[in-house]
Amino acid sequence: MKRLKLGLLPKILIAIAVGIGVGLFCAHMNGPETDGTSPYDMVVRVFVTINGIFSQFLGFAIPLIILGLVTTAIADIGNKAGKMLLTTVLIAYGSTVFAGLVSYVTGAALFPSMIETGASMSVNEADSLAPFFEVNIPPLMGVMTALVLAFTLGLGLASTQHETLMKATHGFEEIVIKTIKAVIIPVLPLYIFGIFLNMTYEGTVFSILTVFIKIIGIIFLIHIGILLLQFCIAGAVARKNPLKLLWNMLPAYFTALGTQSSAATIPVTLEQSKKNGVSEDIAGFSIPLCATIHMSGSTLKIVACALALMIMQGMPYSFGQFAGFICMLGITMVAAPGVPGGAIMASLGLLGGMLGFTEEAQGLMIALYIAMDSFGTACNVTGDGAIALILDRIFRKK
Image 1 (tube, rainbow, N blue to C red):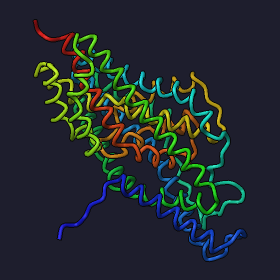
Image 2 (image 1 turned 180 degrees about the vertical axis):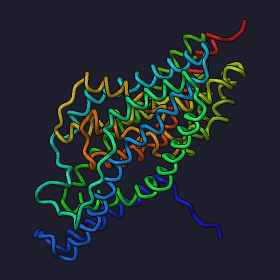
Image 3 (image 1 turned 90 degrees about the horizontal axis):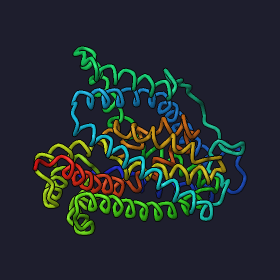
């Protein structure tokens, strides 16, 4: 009998549902008094302890993830010099940053009236249950130090192409990706379960879920608007009907919804781009490259989710703060590993370092992001078709 394998999204949704169910049961059986010694308090404290240890490990791993992924991404791109490469990278980065800015402006206009400012979402307040013990795992370096070091090493390797260092860098990247795939991603459902168990036990979960539903609806509308805008621009440049161009890319969109992987959708995206009139050589160059570097859908989701959670916690925010965050995020997204949830894992360092997100806020970001992972990936790959059209117009041989 074939064993049923659940994807990350179903596991996360099950973890949220079970966490809420167990939290409600424990809260009902325990009653209003909580002193940390009842059997139901003990159950919650077990997962508070596990989450504390995993949070410490994440804090330790994030600078290493940034160093391992960003260094190699910059070094590899620099190895493929050429006018078309530079143009593709600039257009993809511009599209990614623009999507993030649109997401921020839309969220800043809509979220304050939809979200209760200062709503509690912390599991570390004075009346919260304490873990049985704590394990302190300090990171080897700060997040910004890791970013600067990654840029420095990446640019240096791109210039020198030092064979030994390139092999070492790729080896370290493999270790980082293996850690994400074999350790972090498998433990995430348990981590999310613990977060929602604790929030339910404290009585804050339903206000947060209400916000989640509102955010998801707004993000869905933003990503449709971004796709329409991308293809209007591409249609104007290519002098073709933008709606017909977007219609032709729908097979790639729906394939990405199912696979949750830009890389796995490349054959379909490639074929649909050719149907839009993109030449074979330009499509063959731009589509695989954009599957790695064009992350408009992922960026708009992260920006909207981050803004919503900051409003919810009453944290100060500004356009300048988010503009810097989005510009850095556009670079970091290039290094995101091609696994479900890879983009949000690559961005955790920036969320903590530039926006001041706590470990629990990062956990909620992971849950909220993965709940919409398919739509972000679909937006990414469909937008790749728009970029291919622009490149075809610029570089097609007469």
